[in-house]
Image (cartoon, rainbow over all chains, first blue to last red; front, side, top):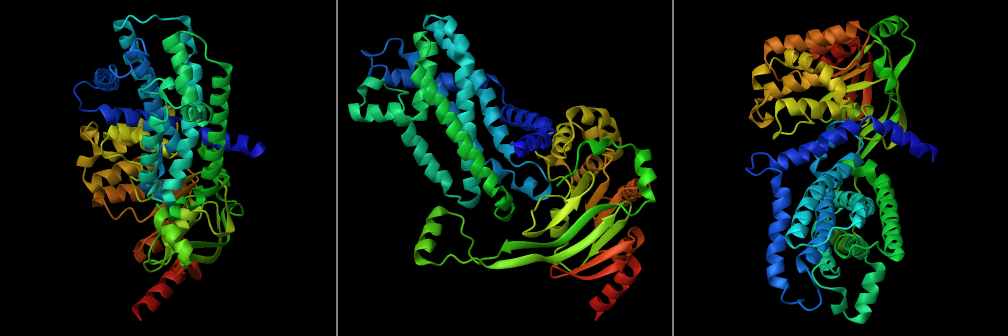
Length: 262
Length: 267
């Protein structure tokens, strides 16, 4: 325990580096693009419109206000997807730097997951636009959004740490993880309502799929305007803790060997 | 490593006071070895890994870049490290600056280190010089506030005022080196690690760098210097380590070791 506190203290002076890395990511993403940060809002909006046109017929009877239903799920899943994919390459991509100066290595992974979070917050604006346009009701439960975001952030960070260190040693993790996320999105009720799943699959999804916990919590707050079930919150918190523990442990165990492989 | 942040703020006078008491050890290297994996086919994917695991063909071909190296550097001394290519000079510097963990042995550093190992490592080609100064400063562990205070000084030393807002990828390598050197030496570090960086840059800048290093040395900074130019080492350093295939071949006064080195090399 004492060692951990010491560690945090020692790495605290790098907090400005974290800030620099996050702003670099954001700046480079939108530099020299005409619409700039507006892309963070427009991009999910455009995808949402296309998907609404395609899928709304399919689930018309089950779901009212399909755009908000779809969009609320999609935002959460997209954050997980993009942040972990970026985190995966965070160590290898900064290999040149890690070979030449001493920097706490985890900071690059943390920076990627954080800059995705900023993007995510921007795209919340798009969600509110959709809610206004579709005349959805805004309820006070929206104030609970940060609680879901914190759980999700910790979960993604843990997963990101695990992937980043694994990718240093095994480069085909990238393709494997791609396949996993593709399957994952279909096993999470993002596009479809939970009821269309066969009972057995639904039972498993609602018990072991962490993304189900986060998507459902977020949807309860935004779409239904109610507080999420305790079970969902518990599930979300436990998944986040397990993820961060495994991620940090694996990362710490292998970080001294990174230099030999990047 | 126990380089403490607070020691960074040590005043110049305090360092000067210490200058003459050469009995305090700044760098203590004790019996370190660094091991690399040198297998002919590097396995970097799971598929290959499992195939080889099943076939029992997972070989670990080891290679020692450093073998049982020990020495002590006292405050205010300047050490040169010489040896042919691949003798482990850069690896040694990397171990000292904390980039590589030694396989065996241990190392103790008392003070802040400013590593000038391959300049511009922290630069991002797509960012402008102004942004890179801050990014690179933070990579070296400074705060944004510290960088703001020293920004003008850095720009002035690098003489790059006109190009501050153009992306670094359009810079020449000499210009990048100037900028990197200015950023790296801004701090009042107690240990300066220099790995053959002065070879880029024009003569006037080279002289400027040497002058700056000289100033730092006068303040009592400890210097570790790698170079292939023996004359330079003789001029700058008091002591020299001669590395050969990862082992110390000779340690001693700069002039003695350099003369011996040249004698052997010419043979």
